[in-house]
Length: 512
Ligand code: XMP
Image (tube, rainbow, N blue to C red; front, side, top):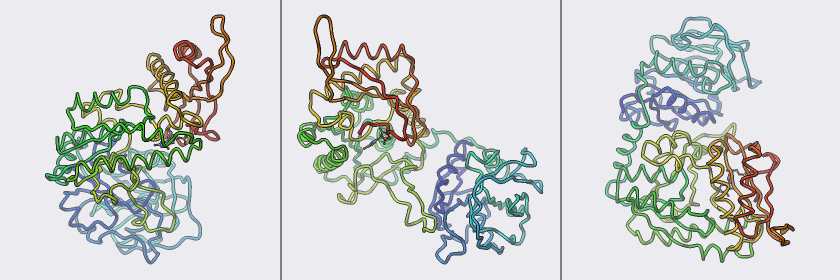
């Protein structure tokens, strides 16, 4: 990788956004721990650095510090927020504790020409979130922009190509943030900006091969986007050394298992072992009504089944997971040490430690939409790559109350109709999720000349950006009418369909 930028992560909640903005400019970046030794950066061929923001104070005793030799690497460095204070302190300026945290918008006024503001207006709005402030610049620096609260909102050491910004250019609240980062990459660092997803595949393949060697890798394939893309990528790298395991937990949607087998076994020719553990799951779930108990049970049984299965692959050394970057960084408390807080999030409940497997997480630097682009590049179908999220506990949290095979079948048959009609009407990809919920309530109906007394299906379709908040989708009445009449006519034991018009909050997306 010829054009690599290193983002040193000091625990900012925006580090992932910085990396993202860089890739948007078609430059390859990697996120490194804040204290990564310079030798590692050199070995990787780092051509420029960004120091992220972070919650700590550079004045505190245990402030996270970079390897000081980064300033001797002779590459451009951009410090953002905490990064500015670090550069201020480490390069000979003065940083002071501030009694007030500056948080929110400020008006930036440019005071000097600078490559980093090339093509931008003289004043624009920027977004701040910092406690300490720089009160004296390090030698060799000059101020290139001020705000109401700071004469050093942006500083530059032109000779050394060092820049530091008090505000956050990576967040959307900062006007022209994207251009600032673009200027840094193109004008200052001279990056060509020709990085594309296929380069990512090449470099990942190399990395995976290097990491894995001749060992075997096991991957729990769920049929979701992340594990599917991880499987396709790893398979491209190491072929038959990869063993995928798909567990049928009895609460999958109709056709799910067959679809996974057809894609990965028949199409990609991967080693795929399907374990039908539905009996085990369903008997454990019988009579369980409480949603959280359902979740726990399913999680625990999954671990048991998975563990049992992979003992067949006794010589496997790695467990692969489709962990994405946003899964890795957890929330960072204000005074914390970032190192302590950056931890892996294990989708399969601590399996690797228990089984003494090493983790292989080839997607851990990517965001969801990038993983989708990668999936398409690897030849996965649009249907697979753009599928809606599906919860791990599956239909168990969509059958209200206790679960029976009959209820599951009713739900599956209704759900398949909804999804089919959503696709036909071109709404499937427009909403965040669309699914059916089985209500164990029986209501009276009339079909032909006969009175019926049957179950209710609720339709839940929501729009959302990140599942944190959601609104019910304003689907056309015609579409709702078709779905309702098809479900009632085609699915035995359903005589009523209702549409959920609750937003999140206060409701949640799933019903349980
Ligand atoms: P809620 O219902 O909390 O859901 O608004 C937010 C998002 O998370 C999914 N979800 C889950 N995913 N295990 C999962 O893997 C779970 O237990 C779970 N519960 C909810 C839900 O489908 C939605 O996308």
